[in-house]
Each structure stands twice: as C-alpha cells, then as structure tokens.
Length: 96
Image 1: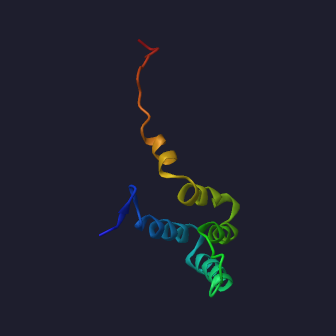
Image 2: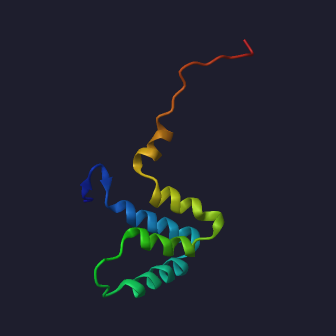
Image 3: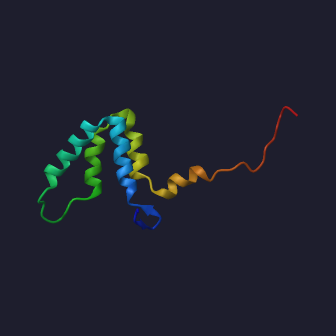
C-alpha cells in the first residue's frame, strides 16, 4: 500500500528513479547516487536536500535526456495535469 499525502504518492520517486535508470542505464544512475551519498554521508547541519541530489542526477544524464529530469523531478503535479485536461470545445470541418 502506498502512503498518500496531498495527492502525491511516495512511490512516485521510486518509479521515477527506475524510469531514469532505463534511459541512462542502471550503472550510470548507481554511480551518480553513490557519488552523491559519498559526499553527504555523516554530513553535519545544514543537511543535504533533494535539490543537491538532483544536481548529481542531472550530471549523469545526457543533454538529450535532460527533459526526463525536468518532467519527473522538477515539475509539480499541477503542471503535468494541465496537459491532460485539454478538450475540444468546437470543431469546424472545412471539408463540409
């Protein structure tokens, strides 16, 4: 069972990381995460943030795939949902 908070499922992060690994390769993703964790382990305050981790993921992702980082990690759900609520209000068929 997924824990729900403010309509965002916590499983989303795992799915996003798995999807990213399918695009850039599991080894690249694991190396980026290892590099990040090596930097921040046992870090005193101020503690690391997800924004810092994202910088390591961006560095490991080729330029042609940077849109994945934006779509999966940087956009909020509201921005994504706008794409799915478009509808046709009027249709003019010029061939009639």
